[in-house]
Each structure stands twice: as structure tokens, then as C-alpha cells.
Image (cartoon, rainbow, N blue to C red; front, side, top):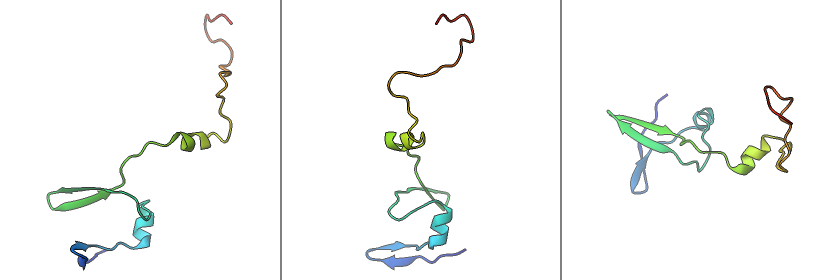
Length: 80
């Protein structure tokens, strides 16, 4: 695919189709890291750690935060 550089206000810009952005996992208003090396411009989504809420949602309400956890049967010389 090719795109043309156009004037955009006081700068220049390249428009990308929704399909390209969707296939790259980029949504509207995402922040991208931009690097330039040897004439190649690279756009990439920066790595972002999940929030506590996002991590908790992955457990479907099965978080055991009351201090009790079933560690299974002793596997060595543990005394219970």
C-alpha cells in the first residue's frame, strides 16, 4: 500500500485507513512511539503495564485477597 504526504495545518501528514489501524491494533487517540533510522519511519504502540483493575478483571472475581490461599498438599518436609 502507498500513501501520500499532504499538508495538514502548518505541518504535513499521512492518513491511514481504518483497516490498517485495526490490523495494527491502533485505535483513535492512541499514543505512538516514532523512530527514524536510515530513512525509515517506524510507528509503534508503546508497551503499557496493565492497571490493577485490568489485571483483576482477568480473574473473573476469583481473587483471594483475604489472606487465605490453598497451596495444595505439602510437597516436601513442610509441617502444617
